[in-house]
Every structure is written in structure tokens, then in C-alpha cells.
Amino acid sequence: MVSGSDQHGTPITIKAEQEGKKPGEIAARYHQQFLESWQKLGISFDLFTTTGTANHAQVTQDIFLTLLGQNYIYKNTSSQPFCPQCKRFLADRYIEGTCPYCHSEGARGDQCEACGKPLSPAELIDPHCRICGTPPVFRDTEHFFLKLSAFNDRLLAWIKKQTHWRPNVLNFSTRYLEEGLKDRAITRDINWGIPVPVDGFEDKRIYVWFEAVIGYLSASKEWAASSGDGEKWRSFWQNNEAKSYYFIGKDNIPFHTLIWPAMLMGYDDNFNLPYDVPANEFLTIEGRKLSTSHNWAVWLLDYLASYDPDPLRYLLSINMPETSDTDFSWREFVRRNNDELVATYGNLVHRVLTFVYKNFDGAVPTYTDMGVTNITTITQAYAELELKASTVLNNMDNELSKCHFKFALTQAMRLAQEANRYLDEKSPWKIIKENRQDAAKSLYVALSVISQLKTMLYPFLPFSSQKLHEFLGFTGKIEDYGWKWQVLPPGQKLLPPQPLFTKLDDSLVEEETKKLGQGPT
Ligand SMILES: [Zn+2]
Ligand SMILES: [Zn+2]
Image 1 (cartoon, protein in one colour):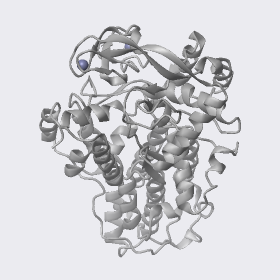
Image 2 (cartoon, protein in one colour):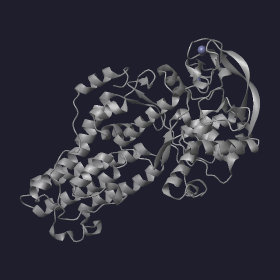
Image 3 (cartoon, protein in one colour):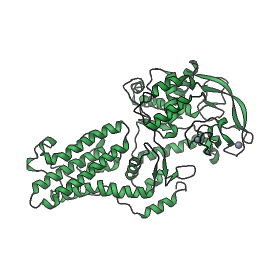
């Protein structure tokens, strides 16, 4: 699992100009914030690097020169927008206008955010300089072009076989290829970025989107080198048993399903192409398009200063825009936390652990005919729910590998509901006085299901799963036990019961909603 932050996008240079800083300082500041956010949110990578390393520049220039040698990159003079006021060429985000396809305003020189289409500056309607608003003039300048047209047929044949892709990703990419790919300029008249390794191009740089996708390969190489075996990256890139997944948002689809595969095809036929690109649709906030430049955002570090990470992870997972756009609202956040995490899952855990702790000397209950703690030795009536839990655990494994995250999570939450119903039916709290054995059995079954829930919910709720792991008397890290049913040893000491989740107050909805539109604090 490798990733990293981009150092070279024009948003970084624009921000640097606004703040009077160097682009490298801006990039480094954001990189630190990303690292802190991942760590606090429980998201871990084997390597989270940047595209500012010497290794990345070297891998990029190698791919550039190889494609150049194969004539997949060629030189051409083209007319590019130039701001007569600022006296410079307007690359990518330095130019804005109206999208010729969907007619949204604020489309950029490289892409329209609203419809996702890659654009070239000449296509924009009413173009103007982002910095001073002046309409540009077009001037001739020499650049390198990636010959995407040469890959159109191969890409189409390959994409048609990717029937396991999400329909939106597959349809978007196919439509594109059926219209025919155009060659794209992959250098820019800017001085921030990876140098073009060709004489005469000293004042130009490699276009960020050509080199940013190379980050997947360069990060793998950096990871291999740091692991002590510099060749280890090959088992991911050159072994055709390896499946690579690219997790992105829908505005990045063409770069991952068309441009990057084309670059890989041209660079080396033995490299693995993406196995899956499970791009998400958009998440809106309170019904409006999320925009960090307009401060219409929930700032992660602000969120984490007030709330636990798991409720947010839960909402973003259960409400993930897997196949269509979804909305984040603070009301939904409170509702999901209180009704689902607290009332369904948290309550199941809390009522079972509290009752067991009080009535069975703070330990996992034992009953006479339990034998070995294995589903086959527990009588059928009791085993049914445990069997169900095992099935859910296996199904979830399968669904997760297909990137069906919402469906996987829903199955686990349904199991928690069933465990609640099971307890209502068995009522161990009522029968304990006349039939302690029966009460012990149903509580043992409930605890077993809870022990499986902590595993199946771990990818979604890592912090509460680790807590629950310890509540149940286990030590060490939950992930070390792997994706399997962790059998509870009878008699294992439990921790004194504490709630797994905190109920949130409705008043936060208004408070937090008011903060939208303001910057991070
Ligand atoms: Zn558009
Ligand atoms: Zn200007």
C-alpha cells in the first residue's frame, strides 16, 4: 500500500505566490498535515512519500526518455495561452474559462472538474488568467507530446475485458476511447517541477499529471529500497499474479484508466496494468459541492480535535459514493453515530459485557457441556448465530476484495442487529436465576459473535475494534490475529465494562454547520 503527496501541481505554485513563499515550503507543509491526518485517522501505508524525491525524478525521466526513444513522445510546436499582463504562459490551473462540453464555469486549462473531461486551454470558452483576469493571447511554444492516439485500440481492447470494474469507471473510459484519444502536451512553460531531460528545454518542466501517476511505480521502488531488497518492487509490477488497485475520485479516472496504462504499455510490455480502479463519485457537504478553495469543507484536523475518528470513518464508509454521489451532513453524522454505532453495535457490546462481568466473576462464562470452544460442539440452536457470523466473516473478505465496501459494512451491522434480537429472545438476564447454564450458553454465543464483529469491523472502525479486543481480555494488536474467528477461551478475564462509543448531542449539528464556509482553525 503505497501513496504520496504531489509536489508539483499548479495549486501549489498558486498558493505559494499568494503567500509569498516557495512552492517547496507549501508542499512540505501540506505533506506534514497529510501524515498527521492519516496517523490520527488510523490510515496506514507501507510508504507515504512525495513526488519531490530524487528517486521519483529519476524514475520519471527514465520513463520519459524510454517513451521518447520509442517515438511515443514527440516534439511539436503548439499555440499556448500567454497572459500579456503577467507576462507568462498560463499552464493548467493558471487559466480558467467555461467548459465546452458541460458549460460549467471555472473549468481549468487541463480539466473540467464538473464533468471530468480533460481539456486543452484552446478549448475553453471565454478563457482568462486566474491571477489577473486578463484574457490570454495564444503564442507558439515548443513542447513534448504523448502519443495517446497510438494506444487507442490497445486500450479499448484491454478495457473491454475489465468487466469487474465499477460501471461508471468502465463506461466513462470506454466512451472516451470510442471518441478517440488525442495526443497531449506533457511539458509546460513553468519552472517548478521535474526537469525535461532534453537539451534546450531547461526552462520547461514535465507536466504534473504525466509524472504524478509515475509515483505509484517510484514509491514501490522507494519502498523496496527501504525494505533492504531493492528488487522487491518487481513482485508487484512484473508478476502477473499481482493485482493492483488504485483508489481515487472520479475526476481522476482518465489519468488512471487511460493515460497511465498507455504509459505503461509504451514503457515495458511486462508491467502490470491496473487490476481495478474503484473510483468514487463525489461526496457533497450539506448538499453543496465540496471545495477547499471556497472553504466548503470539514477540516479533518479540526474534526479530530473534537471527535473520535471511528464515527467519521463509519459515516464515510456506510455512505460512500461508490456508484452515485452522496451527501455528508452533520445531522446524518449524529444520527448514524447515535442510532447505529451507539444503539445497535455499542449497546450490544455494552449490555453483554456488563451483564457477564457482574454475573460471571468478570470472565468469559463457562458451561458444563461446552467441551472445546468450537462451533461443532455447541448445540445447534446456539450454533446457528455463530455459524452465521462465520459466514459473514467469509463473505466480507470476498466483498472487500471486490471493493464493495458499503455492502460489506452493512452485512456486519446486520449481524449486530441479529445478535441483539437473539439476546432479546434468549433473555439471559431473566433466566439466569432458574437456569444459569442456559444463560451462560447464550451469553457465550453473544460474546463469540462480538469477538467476530471486532474483526470484521476492524477495517472500518480500527480504534473501537482494538478497544473491544482488549475489553474481551485479549492482548496485543488485533490485526496480528488476522481475518479469522478469534475463539474466546472460557474463563478469560474481561476488562471492567466501558462504553464502546459516545452518544453525541444534537446541538452540535447547528454549531458545526455554522462553521462551514470558514477556513480551518
Ligand atoms: Zn465540463
Ligand atoms: Zn495574468
